[in-house]
Length: 301
Image (cartoon, rainbow, N blue to C red; front, side):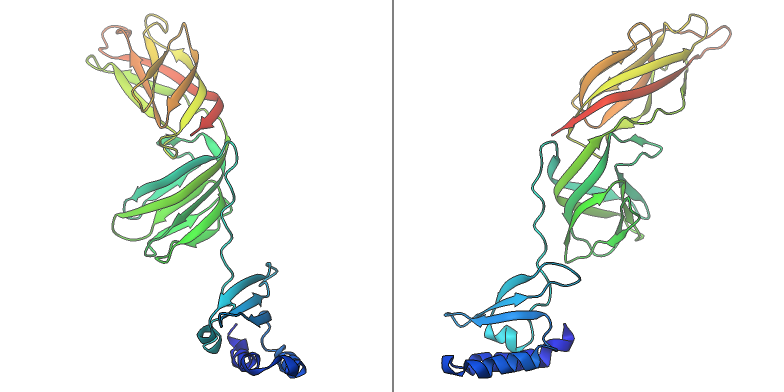
């Protein structure tokens, strides 16, 4: 837009001084400047002394209008930046969160909609939010597009999952996402390789991992299934899997009842446990292999 400014000021002078009976003169000035003031489609003085300006769309975008003062016209502050599009209205099934604070240690990353070695995810889709930071946080979305979060703040609309927030600075960083909307397609986490759970004489349970850490506070209804593959002296009778909801509720899976439809508050923990000692002598440990899966996922606020 810098190339239009001298002519724009000249056009303003013409519009400020022209009278109704001198309309042809106004047209002549506008036509003579049209090759320079390419961003301004029309400008009309209002009764209050300000101007209604119609700005041509940029890069194929839609035109827009803005109200500017005489000073803004004289200092070439017209048609600089198109207004940000309003966020799309949430749709039934969208997961809406007013804000979410993300803590990211130095050089680490926080992930949404992607499985890593510690978390399973329950969704794929798009995420929209607003964020501001001093430049330490870089976002990479599912299309491999990178965005650096600036201090001025910006609205990010419908970024495709998986979405990774990486701290590229050498100190711990906090990032607050506001107006968070996730347009999620529920998905079943891919079953991991079977877990090998070994319990010492005084151990009764071990955590196998967490599900839904990227959607805390939301609800999930899932069909939890466990396959108890191997045990030692007495079949699988000692093996158990417990689903621990964040609100304290628990659901147990056993060899006799290996599947259950459960409603949990995210995130939830998968815990392997034993109810008796099942290893052959002289070992003082109990061991078994299990595989856990979650099907028919439904998500809600």
